[in-house]
Image (tube, rainbow, N blue to C red; front, side, top):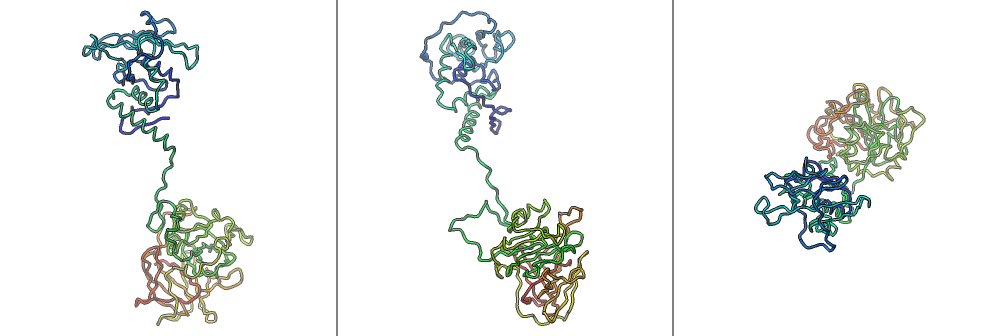
Length: 502
């Protein structure tokens, strides 16, 4: 485990906590001034003392101090007296001529006592020789000989009362040229380790999530009884419908309350059918979503969007929008492939597997008003709206009191044989611009701006009315008025809205 502390309190490399070793072995290392295995060796002028607060004899028989002799092979020689700081003297262990193989001895590990040695009338007390019997394995027997220092250090480590004291001693030995800051670093490290052990592993808290309406929330909404309930408005079903010639005839399109026609790549068209008062048994063919759909659907209260898929870069935007995602990935049981058309024009939806019942007319928060036609208007029996590679024609039928729909010059007839017809047709002039998305052929995906204001043509009762539209924000519906500013009512029945380039 590597633990780093900010602010430069620890050495430049991470502090590595060594594996667990026996207390006896650690005591011998502390007595000899050698760092523990796996830890970087400290500098010679940085030390924190032995950590012992007593000079009493340990509870074992004292050992006789052997005479000074040269190191025999396989043995450790007694270290020489350390020189006073800033003066000459015998070399330290690990240096040339020290007589001690490997390792370094820090000056700070030498205890001081009154005397005539160098530095302030003190002399350095020798650290006694410690011999290790390697034949006893990893936890070898330590035989401390000489003065009380070795036994005191070993006894202190054996009886260590907390992990924090051991960590402080380890960090104290690892500090280089930061003696005054060593205690602070050790305390910080000990506090960090203690906090980790006490708290355990934690996960990053979930960040704020944009709900698509300019508001943010920290995770899921509360579910307590005191939480404010959602508005008593149903959620409509919006289905993206393929409008390529190979996808026709459509299924379930005549049951939609509102049908939006928008431009897509290559100048072609695609439909979005919104269902609130009636749910047919089958709807399709279902195709992919576009960026413009997200802005258009924000006028509804968390609608269900049924679509076949979308390009990868658009999917995160769909997931973050205030709607229920209902693609085959999430709702596979609601979709099936038909046998009457080739893929990809044969994906169909069973809406009853998404909604238990139709939400009702109150879910149509479109801003539309229904009622008697306004005064004025001009008689018109046919209107054609052209896209770069598609066109829609609406012919007035006096017998049915409806506008009969044709696409690309062919009558639109549902699979049940019924002619698709609208009670009201709106030709809404909007800004159609390039978006940041492209199809697999490199064609840019147009973005249809439905927030703002502009002009429109409203067809109802065999007449055309000049109108103005206004949608202040994405969560608002679109209000249509006459030139005089009065509400322009729609006829009761299916409404088609064709977004034409202004």
